[in-house]
Amino acid sequence: MNDPNRREALRHSANTGILIAFADPEAQKDDVKQNEAPKPPEKPGDRDRRAVIGAGMTEAEADCWAMVAELAGKFFALPELHPMDKQEIATAIHVIQHRLLSRPTYRKYLESHQSMAKKPE
Image (cartoon, rainbow, N blue to C red; front, side):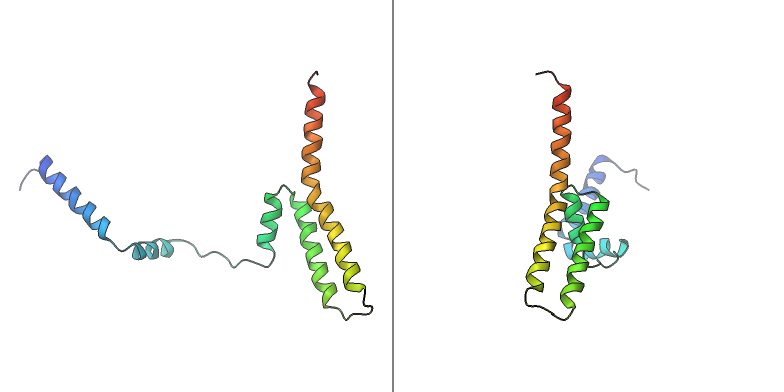
């Protein structure tokens, strides 16, 4: 049996590199996908929740945001009793959404103001 030398080691590593270079990338992706655990299906509103939390809302504020969306969906599914119902409810919902969206900014403002108050002018 031959003792491996540097030349043989280099040849073997080069052959491996060539095989990898010409391998089918789609097959490699399939191998990776098979090893991953399947993700649970996304529920309606999950993406929106991640977006508002990413914008700075707390979990509780994001819960309120989701409740407002659910309320809007359920209200607009009710039979219309008055022609102005939809417009008035849409305005009220937008007021609540505006207040929720402004909370992260207001928290940041208060933090900045408090940190400035600690520093002498």
